Length: 470
Image (cartoon, rainbow, N blue to C red; front, side, top):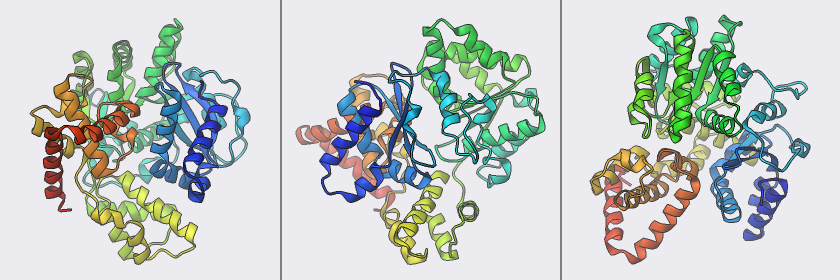
């Protein structure tokens, strides 16, 4: 069975059959169309198109786990799913083959799915065109939490390749603005130094392309693309590089090549180099040799400023008490802050209601009773309880003294934070969503048969309640 348009139609039919007369499900599921299948043969990525950003947000928040679960039951092998905003009903003629395409086809797909006004180009775009032109320094709201990271990126953009800032390594929790700063630096460099060729890429895509090049014996072409045909290298989610030894080797030499040639490298990750499990010592040392800047959760005043800016950008009029309320309860990330704003906009438009304090409080009421504990804090509670390290929970070891606490931590994160399977997997060193799904099911079953484990979970839940006051 292949991940193609026929398969996706089959999945939609199955989901509808399980939810008879659920008009809400039909409203959001029906417009999701098959676009393409990318990635590698070992780990294909199913690209699904949604009409707009609000639809994308609703699907990710409410249907993503159901879709992953349904596909996993039918497909039975590792896979990924991406929900891409197409701006209109997806043209299924984009699919030219049911075979998984090589990673180089991503550029063609990006051109086909371009949301810019005007006609769409069918030619592969240059690497610099993968930058999001809306993410600039002028659209980044600076607070005490991000002053240093912002200043570092700005200085690099003004003088790329300087020894003191190469490589520049930005780290911080998910949803804090690291990707925004990467794009802002790239856009500024492109404006100041138009002759420089800029490559922005996720570490996961770098990994996939490298594996594909090794398999096809085309490493010379791969190295030429990243070392010879690029002057600025921007890499997001660097922690995924640790997944493969051969990829680490290539990444290490690529970064070295850039630095030796006085070409700028800017990297972003959700953790410090020393905390990336499986990263080789020489790669860790190389990443630590440049400038490291952290970015954390903004304080209330900065969250209010960000919210005002976002509301103005989305043309949403918010009363002052609403702004303060949203900023006060959105404590986990800037992404959560923006997500809450989009949710309010969506409900307001669907219901035809004006945005006021009572409506917003009703829409976001779950936040007032929701745990304010973080993913890392839950991990630490579990690690301390079982006398293991948080690093062990994020590792790939399958030893029972580590596996059981890891599964319990996943279970508690899902219960108290309601994170998606994908987000939980990423928090644990990039685990597959099926691994998380199996862990949740196993803990649920063991609670009924293993009294000691049930007692451990009860104790941990009580400690979380004590922390959150809920």
